[in-house]
Image 1 (cartoon, one colour):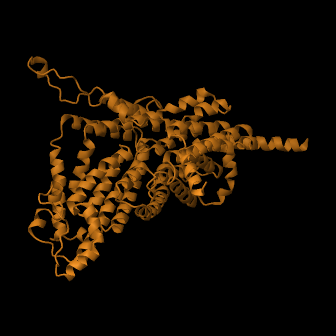
Image 2 (image 1 turned 120 degrees about the vertical axis):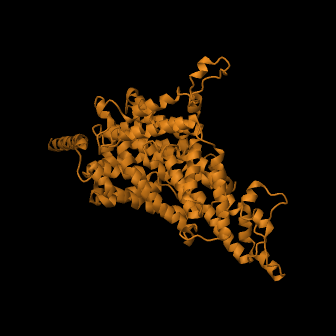
Image 3 (image 1 turned 180 degrees about the horizontal axis):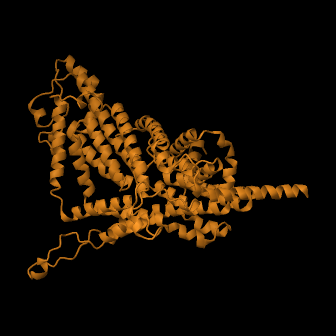
Length: 606
């Protein structure tokens, strides 16, 4: 049998082979390490392999602790199972339910079109508008849903600016044919070939009605050059949306799963740490998001041709006509939505109330409204669940007292803002299981002593300056998450990073926050994140486009995180000092080490 045939068969069964071989290959681990630590590390390594290769669905792998930790004697099931629905999961669930109600009534589309009418239609401003809208929506909706909603809007605007994409591609390759036409004396070339009865999109395109009335007198080289420019701008539009969605998700705790993993593991490792909540995280991460978004906009606009003198100076030419048609298209789409109805207004009100209450509960830099309740009783999860519960009974139609006294009024069924069926269909339950699996793994690492054991072997890294360590940690996780799920990545590495910080007496937040944010900075490959995959699936982007853009985006992200941590992050979280809430954990680790060393010296004496 040929090698190529064998390799194809192996590839067809590679997931099954990974499932079977991974536990066998790593089987020596429990026998070469201390009993409990070895067993826990064995489970962690097997789950990490399954997560990184997706040999099993991510959610199924996340449920393995329920059967493996109790059966291997690492953790009893009564301690494992509660990890799958902690208060952090309720906060995440409330954010998802709120997002599904926004999508149900189309409020997200109204927000997107309104922002685009404000920013203008020049390519660089439109890219900025797309990025601002995508990042804002992904703070509350999932990154995937935001990208899936924004891409059709972007394509419609681009078609009104530049016409059909396939025609653009043909014009970019039509140099030889065009030159032969010029030699034969035909110096005018149509930019688009239109049917006798133009469609709506073709009327809005660059050669719409005006193009049929007057010929395009540009040379073939001018047409080719202009088409190449338009194609670059088109790619810039498509690539900026998933990138902005990934950046925006870092600004709120509910924006992306790694942020919630951080909260859950902080509560597991450092129960006395109450520095991170929705308000304090937003105060730190929102300026970071704005900084990175601005740098990313500059880079994408520069790379794809959006930065030019047209940003500041108005010109009356062919591009200006296309921009006017694009503006008309956006305004027309917004006009079609009509005035805000009662349901949209209600959702907007509850959405703003949801954000304000979460932000002001206990923002740390000012006194929050939680002081009116018993200390430690009201959390972000309580706030979120209260607001979203209202959506299930608040009416979607404006109530009227006259309806009760009008026998002729139609007795239509009462429709709330959100039905349970819609919420059930919209919530990605697999992510909630994935969060639970991460919390269960963190609990096992703590209880088994595996985290302390790993930390002891990381002692040589104490020689690295903390500021440099922040850059290295962020860079490593940003690269690792290019090939693995960002949730799985942070689940695997966050306990190790926390133990490293303790071992070298650095505030754990100084390492854990940049690690968490860095896991969302996956820009280089289509497989890195679902938003990247959606944009790539449009068929208009190539891998080299994403690699070239994403490589610099990763560098900008790493530098932005480092700047944030060493400026306002230090001031907000007091990162220059080793905190008291980390002392008990550290002391227990030290006592354990002292006890072990005492036993070893006693044995040597005997």
